[in-house]
Length: 351
Image (cartoon, rainbow, N blue to C red; front, top):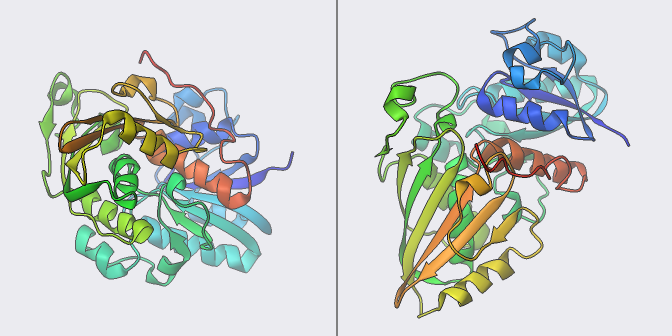
C-alpha cells in the first residue's frame, strides 16, 4: 500500500497533537515533518507523551529544514498554525513546493481559508489576510455537505461551526424552518487551545458553566456564509456559546419555528435521509451525549418538536470531528483514499 508524505504546520498545539495521533495510525499517511520554530530539535513524543510509541526519534523542524524535505510528487500538508499566521506559512510552503516539484494538497484547520473574500475574513478577525491570492483555491465545508470540489485545497470549518453546520445546513436546505435559527453551544476547554488563559484556568472552569461572546461569536458569520454557499439561502443565526467544565466535546442545540407542524419521528427521518451513506453521522432516538463521541470522528444528532417549533441536538468531539478528524477525512477525499481510512476508532466513552 503506497503512502503519502505528510507535513504538519503549527505542530505543538492540541489540534496538531490530534493530527499526529491520527497520522500515527493512518495506513496511507506517513509523517515526513512537523513544523515548530519554538520547539525545533525536540522529539515529537517528548512534547506529546501520549505519542510515546509513535514516530521514533522524529523531531520538530524549522520551516527552512522542512522546505528541503518537500518531495517531488504528491504530498499532504495540514496546517494547525494560529489564525492570522497560517495563511502566510501555507503560502510559503506552496511556493517552495512548486519550486521543488511538490504537488501539495493542503487542509488548513485555522480560520484563514474559511471565507471566500479577504474583506469577509478581515471584518471578523480584524486583520489583513496573509495570502489573498490563494483564497479561490480553497473550499470550506464539512465533508458531509460537499460531495466533491474542484478546489485543490480545503479550509476546514471551526469546531463550533462544524457542530452548528450539521444542524443548520439540512434545516435550511430542506426548508423545514421559518424565521431565525437560535443556537446554544457548550464546548470543552481544549477548544481554547494549549496556552492557558483566565477563561481556561482549571480552578475557574472546573464545576463551572458560563456564556461568552453571546450573540457575537466569530463562528456565527462563518456558519452563515458556508450555509449560504451550500444551500443558496442565507439563514439568520443567533448563537450563544458557553464554556463547559470538561476537556473534550461540543454540545449544540439549534431551535427554530417549524414551517409546518411536524412530528419528531418525521424530522428524525428527514435528517436520517439527508445524512444517509455518511459513515460518521448517526441520527439517534433520544438526545445525544458527548461521551458517546469523545475521541472519535463521529457526529450524533437528536431531535424534538412541539406544535410549532423544533430542536436539533448535535454532539461532536471538538478536537477530532471539529478539527483534526474532519481534516483527515477531507485529506482522504482529496487524495482519493476512502474517507473512513484511519478514522474508524471508537469513542472513549468513560473519559
